[in-house]
Amino acid sequence: MRVFLKRPTALAICVLAALPVLEVRVTAYAPVPRCTKTINPDITASGHHIIPADHYRLVAFSPDLAKQFKFGDRFRLEVGGKVLIVEYQDRMPGQRRKKIDFLLPTVRNCKEFGVQKGKLKLIEGKEKLR
Image (cartoon, rainbow, N blue to C red; front, side):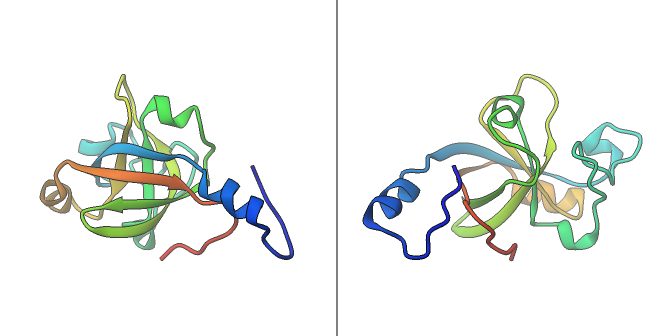
């Protein structure tokens, strides 16, 4: 649902506020063969070439979540007491459900991140990645 209004009405504000918040399990991965199980770990499922600026900004979705969204969709992710703006650019293999992987620079960072609970909400419109 895309909404473009010159002035937001009360109805539009209620509709945007009604976008679902997904409760997800958040883990992390690094762009290395050990984590990605691909020949070229620097390329995501969407074909995006990973650069250092993508760390802490890109996510991979489990197959059940991937069916609901398209590559390039941006989300507000609340995890570990922080709010991040992330972009969906990769897909996880297997039968995982309600899970996202957060792109971090190293395997050590991934181990420190661990497994956390998070809240994910689709962002409508063009909000910048931070």
